[in-house]
Amino acid sequence: MADLSTCVLSQEELILELFKIQAFKFGNFKLKSGIFSPAYFDLRVIVSYPELLPSVTGYMWKIVEDKNVQFDSLCGVPYTALPLATILSVSHKKPMLIRRKESKDYGTKKIIEGHFKPGDTCLVIEDVVTSGSSILETVEELKKEGLVVTHAVVLLDRGQGGHQRLKDQGISLHHVFTLQQVVEVLHKYNKLETEMVERISLFIQKNRFDAKEISSSNGAGLPPQKQPRKMISYSERARLCSHPVTRKLLTLMEEKRTNLTVSVDLTTAAEIISMVDKVGPYVCMIKTHVDIIEDFSQDFISKLTDLAVKHNFIIFEDRKFADIGHTVMQQYSGGMYRIADWANITNAHSLPGSGVIQGLKQIGLPKGRGCLLIAEMSSSGNLCSGDYTKETVKIAEGNRDFVIGFVCQSAISDDPEFLHITPGVQLSSGQDQMGQNYVTPREVILNHKSDIIIVGRGIIKAEDPVIAAKAYMEAGYSAYMERMS
Ligand SMILES: O=c1ccn([C@@H]2O[C@H](COP(=O)(O)O)[C@@H](O)[C@H]2O)c(=O)[nH]1
Image 1: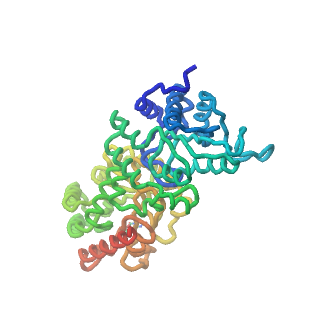
Image 2: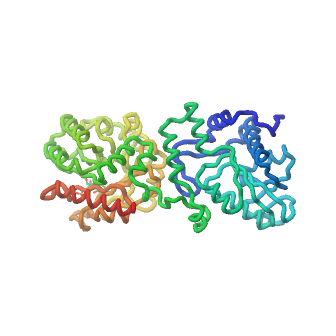
Image 3: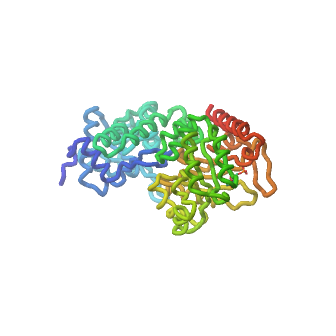
């Protein structure tokens, strides 16, 4: 039998092994608090790797010894820490207590199982700490039984304020690793790119849990940004996002101080190019409907893409794909428009199910393109609402590598990586003769918490489109500034 009381691997080796078994995951993960994190630690898999357990528990015990922590019994926070607590108990001959998550509705109905006396001291064992809420839940139950808890040992402290919060409750938290240390080791051994290291460091900085804020909330705890996407600036979100188009778009929005997209719904190439050159300085995106252009040509595309460089904007072809995966692949890559070759962003209805995204992704992903899902519409009587919208968000969440956000009427996801882009915008609210509904830029950005306004006729049919574009740009961006203040 392996010696369970010693560390078999060095700390760096243990981090690399935990990475190998996918206990450390990098991408975009929803935490218990509801916020999204670029890093996630999932130690549940450890039970399948008995050869790693002695190192994990060995380092936890080393801390107990180094800090000279004295206790009568130990208790793991259910469930992941239970095997860790069991190994520590057996190898160091310390009695263990088990905290049930729910009491049984028969027998003794106990929450804390095991033998103890009121006044006994108990050491709490946990796998990972973010806000400290899970440890505090266990401590509360132990205290109800008269046990005294002043120390907790954790394998990974995410460094987001849990340490201070526990300290405020009289509990000293001792960790084996911090998330920052883990990230540095993985970077040193080329397992993590510099960009991800920066994203994680920024995330830790921006998402520290404030003890006072948590104690006045629901116990799960909320980070400083209670509404993550809505309250983070465009430039900060750019740094949090992994998709290159989202990063570029959010960065240029802050640089150009605009959240305006102009929908250039004109029907000749010359008219469109002339309009784009005029409004280009005031927009973050130009939206097209190429299938309404009478004289579409590759020359039009090269002029449009040149203007995108000249004025620094993103091109969004509002194609609204809505067919099976195989067909949309052909529609996106081929035909006379070859949309995937020049549009940074296109969009799709979620109506056909996730197959539409699978098809588009096969073409768009290798080209670094992004896709928006149409989750809501601005037209009266449209069917995109309720469960349809919720399912659309789920499809997006399952395809984060390609889906970068939504065409919608108001915020439908708190994930800072997802853009919310809203059409049906004019300087005064109202309706056109065919049921298109309009709301103001302020309403969209400030009240509906969207990111970007789409304006078509309000600008292209204005007497002076440049003056109109400036007015919309000013209205949209000042609403964003107001939201941030
Ligand atoms: O729900 C939706 C989705 C897309 N659109 C498109 O946006 C513009 C709006 O033009 P306006 O002239 O400002 O009404 C247009 O290209 C639509 O196809 C939308 O309006 N609503």
